Image 1 (cartoon, rainbow, N blue to C red):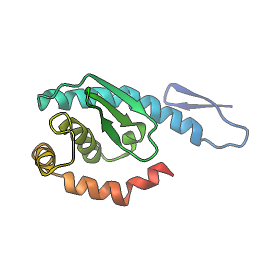
Image 2: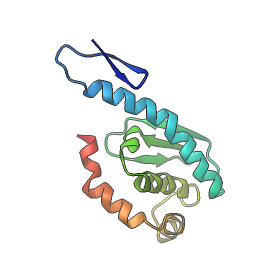
Image 3: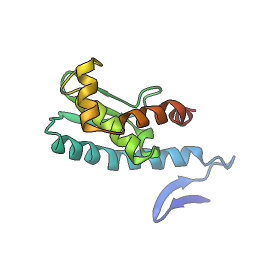
Image 4: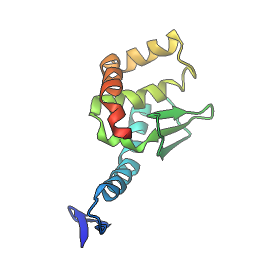
Length: 132
């Protein structure tokens, strides 16, 4: 048997009936499709340049930003509430202004993302379950 999501073929249903690998594959494809344009739209709003956006399977991080302006995002971000996703994207974008976690960096984050404290709290309390 095959698994489908709408008109998108996910693949053969495993003999053991475990659909988690198919669901993860679908979520990863959605992340590749949705996260880079969302990041680049926020970058344009905040006048931040980004060299490249990658989607990765980070085991403990939600994102990272390199000195060269490459922003890597965890595919699991497609599973978090929109305000939390936007916080992570803005957090990484603000690293293009301050490549550290200084008080100045957090002032940039607070100005760009008024709900950042609530989003950080959500990631601490709810987000870890997405890595299980």
